[in-house]
Amino acid sequence: MAQKKKDAEKLLSTLMDIQTWQKFQDALSMMTGLSTVTLDPDGNMITQPSNYNDFCLRYLRHSKKGRSLCARSHLEAARAVSESGKPALYECHAGFKYFAVPVMINNAHITTIVGGQIIGKEFSRDNLKKVTRDLDLNIDDFEGELQRIQSMSEEQFVKAKELLETLVGMITQLNFKKYGLTREVAELSALHEITSLVGAVGDFDKMMRHLSEKITQLSGVERCTLVIRDQKIERFLVATSMSLTPGFRSRYIEFTRDILFERRLFGRDSFIVETVKDIIEPEYVALYREFGIERRITIPLVVRDRTIGIIELYPEPGLELTKERMDFFTQVAYQAGVAIDNASIFSHAERLATTDGLTGLLNYRTFHHQFALEIKRARRYKQMLSVLMMDIDEFKAVNDTYGHLLGNVVLSEFANILRQGVREVDIVARYGGEEFVIVLPETPGDGAEILGERLRQAVADYAFSGPGAKTLHLTVSVGVASYHDKINTPEDLLDQADTALLAAKLRGKNRFVRYTSAVGREVTRKTAAAKSGEKAKAKPKEKPAAKKGLDAKKKSKAKDKKAEKKSKKK
Image 1 (cartoon, rainbow, N blue to C red):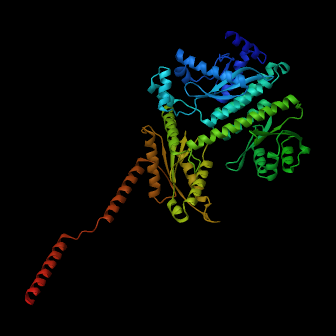
Image 2: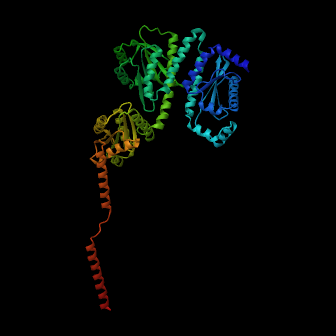
Image 3: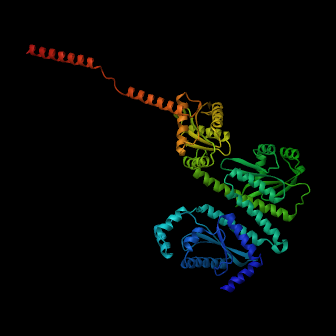
């Protein structure tokens, strides 16, 4: 057994030394989010595990028996992959999925990388009993810890598996002896930096900006443009490196709407180098000349036979475009494509979980979580914090008159007004129905009032979509409240903002009101008066007591007269 491990290490050293391979394996784990380890043909570990799952260490491998069961799973995977020479998917003794990827040199299998992660948390009670019985674990402790861990979705796991297979294939194809180990490891590290942006930057648009900067740093080209077509919303996303001014980006975006750009973007499957005089689109020629661009390298971003966008690099005149440099550009483009594709899936899944499906703003649940964190931060660091509560005036009439479909369009357009009117650090959410809330970190009440008035005016000036070619003009009422030392809970501040909003409604709508104790008393008084007025209308009028007595006497006299007439007839 020990001899086989040494033989595997020796074979692996033909590719790179064990210490460098360990770094490569660590980079793979960071890129994919998987736990990885390299095995010899008998399933023994050649390297130390990377990104090892703490849950596995504490529960599945805590005992000699657990480690033995884990080693048996590894052995089965290593042998199967060694025989087939192809990646394969397995389940470990505890029921978690993992896969094995062969490391091949000249079609010879030299070792195996195993990657795994906890996927989902759906375990049957029978399976839980079996696992905990086999490993001498407390079933309640095991199940409770299982529910707390952060797991991958099936889709994320498949993506990570594909990425790991691709990277292992790339690294085994590189000729380290010819080009030198230092250069290749540096390039691998560069590719890792690109992929790591997926996990480091949560916002997709922000990731695009970071990615364009990273591409320029790694490629040695100072200026670049990254273009992605978002098919879900039928638009192009454009990010440019910081060395290109915003004016370049805005002009470039105008051209991406043209059908010619569509053909240029998706009509290629390999890179092309052009000088400005070779470019056939006059708009681009004028733009490039204005910004001193003499050459354009267009590299398609292809993921699983799908072109999702392009990278445009603008090399300086003196930069030599060797075959090795162009090969590296292609690798950068491939890795960027994978990163963007992964990020779009993660971003879409996160949006589904955290945002309102109609408006794209934060949903009620996510808002309360983030708002609670902002309250804690304001209290801890004694920072200012303000809240705007907003309600579209007479929105029910829109639904009643034009239907809920048009009402949904109005809500979506209203959300866009809010989104465009706030800062990146502000929190905007749909609170319910036609009610919205904005949290303004580090903002005093005066600043919140200015924003509230600006948004109120923006809504009043906006032409909302109406039936046919018509437009609708709507207004909004705004309530403003600011954090102070008497606020004990997030709900306290929301209640004050809601009270201010109600005051704006009671004062005639289409206005903003800032909460004060006087505003609170005003709302209490007016709502109490309104309730008492409603009760008075609902209660039937009672006749005065004197009138009741007269009516009774009249009825009695009429009754006596009627009886007297009857007796006379007899």
